[in-house]
Image 1: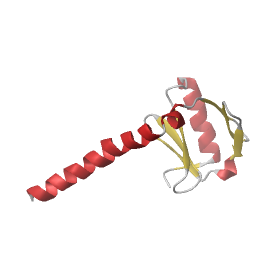
Image 2: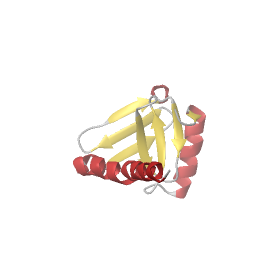
Image 3: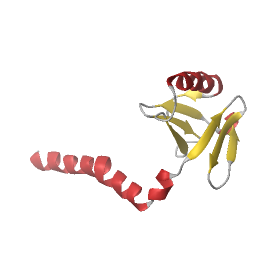
Image 4: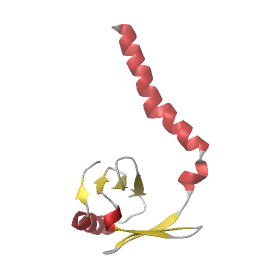
Length: 108
């Protein structure tokens, strides 16, 4: 019993702490890029320093709102994270209404 508990605890440490640090440590510029995101009735637009891209709402399957992010899913394994830290409270309310009008809520 103790051995099983120890193995479970080690796996949890690996998945919660070690793996995220390994991923973010390998590509620090990928997670540090700054971009401007636009949300409107047509779709979503991204403007990083190197160009721009836009998607209409039909490209997304659904969305999910967590404590710190909006997750916009293309499919089961492909999604964008939009951090709430840079959004005002009024904008978050407007974005929730916009997303609810165009996408279904829930995880894929």
